[in-house]
Image (cartoon, rainbow, N blue to C red):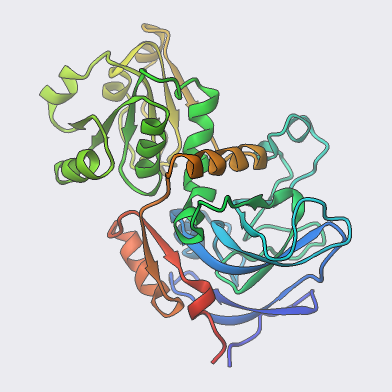
Length: 361
């Protein structure tokens, strides 16, 4: 029998995989979910992607873990119940939940449709909900979410391969849209070929762009070009390759979390080119001002995406047959998957088969 989480505040019980400490491992646990509110959607979780953020949180690498941590913000499943005020969803609908489950809804960001930048955002897991309880994520068999933070899955989008788009997909789609890096014929670079990088390549190609993957790993060239469809591949440690690509790119999506000097990468941009930071290096960036000022270049950041843009993104992906490359794992293999993720041994996203494997003993 799975142990129960302490200080439960809600009456509805659910089964989950939780980290109880910073060891990096998870174990079955009983958690509580709130009863269905008037504006809530109850979702039977069938699949949940494993994001690198999950690993950081589980291991308390960001020093903010509130144990027990039930991670997972790439949630896909079926609606099993709706509150009386719910207008947009019905029982049986295919739906998803991404990185957030609430916001203040009254600040400037929320009013403009960018609740992902709300200062009072409530994340899908490891966050304080309005009632003071800690939110639990998708490593669980069910979840209750306000309908405003639920997205509809198009019929053409498989739940398992679509789940990672709810974080990785929108994290790259949003900045490409808002920084004009979605125009056919433009040249975009993608630094890093992992969970975010591989879908960035796919979206860029769907937009009709020329794509160059920039990586420290020469061994990824074949998969980048032949499997993902990149037009070119540059090994960042090869000075001659970097020199030949200088000044050729309208923009760069930087998904790497490694500490690096920005100077050689900014040199790849055309005048007035843009580099968008998505990765979170532990140490401060090394940015020579001349590399930005001289060419009128922009270095920007982007975080997740709004619910509105997430719905737009997943509709676009379904229309273009775009989905994540995944490795499906059972609940019993999540600890092994977390270990492999820490070593970069996944192409390109682990997804937990929650519906078929997370069951009470």
